Image 1 (tube, rainbow, N blue to C red):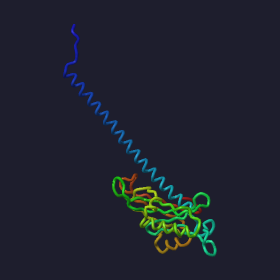
Image 2: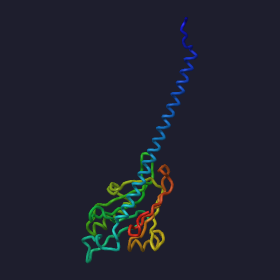
Image 3: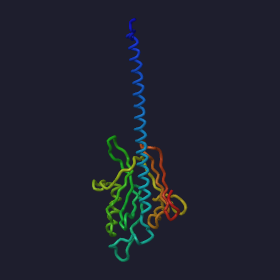
Image 4: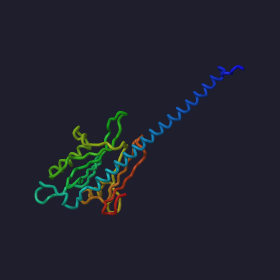
Length: 229
């Protein structure tokens, strides 16, 4: 009795079927890998946003109280010890004088600027931090330096900044007298020159490709007025 083998046609059909199965399997694995990479990139973007907003809140939480002299008093002023400004917005930069560990004071600034990246030019939301300040003169120099950083930064200024998000634009509002207002309005300007605002609202329009996209709004309220939101 002769042993029967596979015909050439049967072998070719089997090879075609196996090739199709291998192709479908590869496409499935490739799709899963792409989905995993997209999920990872989105998670990284969301984590970056959370970190940036946490840093924003922390800076505001630790800003000095402009209505009190200690512990924001700085040495080297004539007469009584004088207090540095706590917060000020000049349409380009939000400057904050804040406490770090112990009694250390620094000026922190937030702003935006177009920067060149490997994929082209994009607007970045940036944070800048000064060296520690101990005297009124050092504070004034750091305060002025923060303003210069927001307009025409030098290489040394840029070395102290950190890019946090890609954005199209950003806005700031102050909460005072039970209403939100532009810091540059007459009411907002009065706040900047006196006591700290009761709240600060940050609105970010994220750039295309910056996950999760759209507009983000964060309201910070002085802890003494019931916490943050």
